[in-house]
Length: 170
Image 1: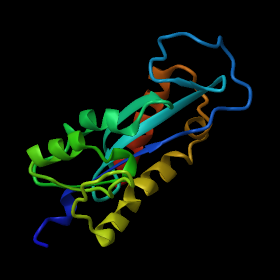
Image 2: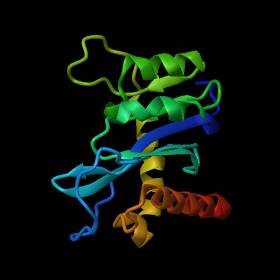
Image 3: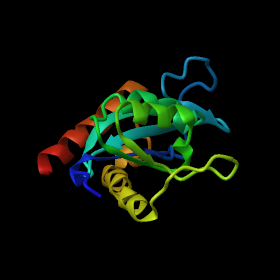
């Protein structure tokens, strides 16, 4: 294939579950990265990781936000000529155009309702498990897995501390 395997980039998200009893007030229009689902707080961590499963960029959104909306901000951290591996939630023309502008190949499976099909490698897509391993590593920390901290800034800071620990261990 002629591409450097270290230039692979992966996109995905994590949706941690809040504890059974959430404190604080319901509602409010300014969610600051925490969404609501049937009264509970929900959150998604969107991550761009390298070929070794180390995080390169992180974003936090409410649980109701679509995956493709945060991808553009993450793709700014992607180097030129990389290969982007993402799941169907990131299949949009905007993401593919952003990847093409960075001279990167987007290996994203097409959604079932898309009329135009794109080149897709199933073998290469299996390498996306590095991002799943990354999310599994950060879920080993109880505060992240249970969405212990209700303040979105503190929650994202805790995730970034864990990411620093992952980088130091590599």
